[in-house]
Image (cartoon, rainbow, N blue to C red; front, side, top):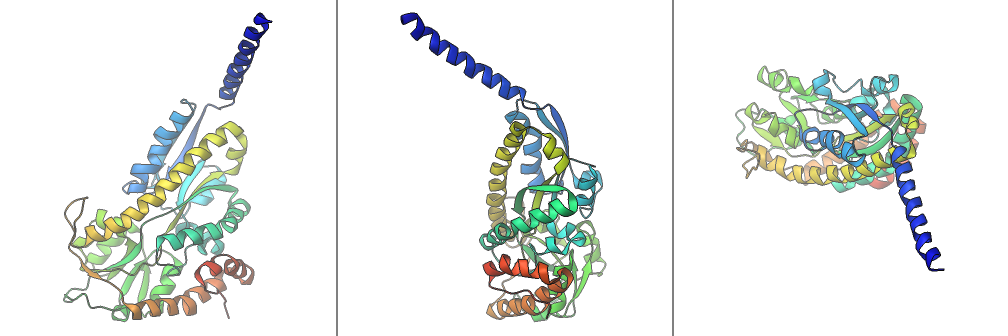
Length: 356
């Protein structure tokens, strides 16, 4: 009886040990091809690259690794990401919804200009619209969404030489040429009487210097890091959105992985997603301080004149969104698409999209 009491626990321990070995054996040895976002910005440098180069290899005991590079290093613009992901040019892709929306008006619905003005509301929008995005990615791009995250507030940075005042309203930008990077921002800009010019982020500073555009819409941290304050005078702090980002995987690649592989990746990405939201909230504050009068923990403040929109501009923004932004998007997307948006995002923001 004594011998049996000793042997039984030993057998059980051996089985547990063998189970652990088998579980480890289930983890593949794979090197993934991964494309990230902009190499000069914080999401890539502090979080995306860290996950692929350190977190994932560490969690998998070195079995899951990546050849991960930002799109800027690969010479990509970002517009072509989902097409290349579908073709298998890489396994995982971090991308920006508004950049890939030219291939799908459905995708554009998560990032319509001016529908929300704060990060908490935007997270609700993303959560509500996620099932629609997931289905569109599967059907059109053979891709699976694994993570959703935002960029800092998108605001307008303008060269208004001779205007030393912060007492400027949205209507004062009528007639100006404003850099945008997607259709919905163009719709909003045209809604207050300005002209929209679509150019890449790399072209912004030379375009302002040459007078091609008067203002640029970009994130508050990108504005500081790119030194946009050197060619502009005012920061018009109307938040036009947060530029939703995604991490997607080619579905053939995803289905080829063991459940253990997928669990390791999902677990790490769950933590990374929370880091992204927390960092973006902090950067919203940091960006405005750094492009303005400070204090700035990134370097010398940019010294721009901060223009804080008043109640009249808030009312004008909602009017433009409801009568122009949503109507034009609903026409691009169609009645069924707009109806799905109304049942999800529309209920969050209290608005209705209709082409009528």
